[in-house]
Length: 120
Image 1 (cartoon, rainbow, N blue to C red):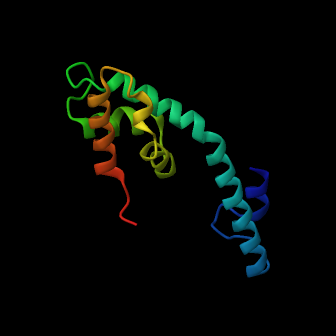
Image 2: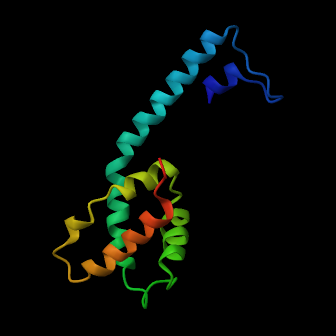
């Protein structure tokens, strides 16, 4: 907050004397965001694992449609960012293979992949 107050004015003016100073600030901000994301990964993976365990059955969840359940309960319910969703996309669903509901969890994960996997 202090950093923001020292570098910008509510009218939209940004107080950096050189482009190099602004580049340094942007680099530092991106580094901090990446660090936060790295520390958040285990929490997001745990959240997604619990989502799969609790939401695999279309007859018992809030939204029968997998895409609706993912969007409303997982993403909106947990305020997930695109980077958070990318962590979910990389989740190893096979780590739950010993569960009798694994096929339904695979289907739910496949719905996430179909809807949110980037085309890069």
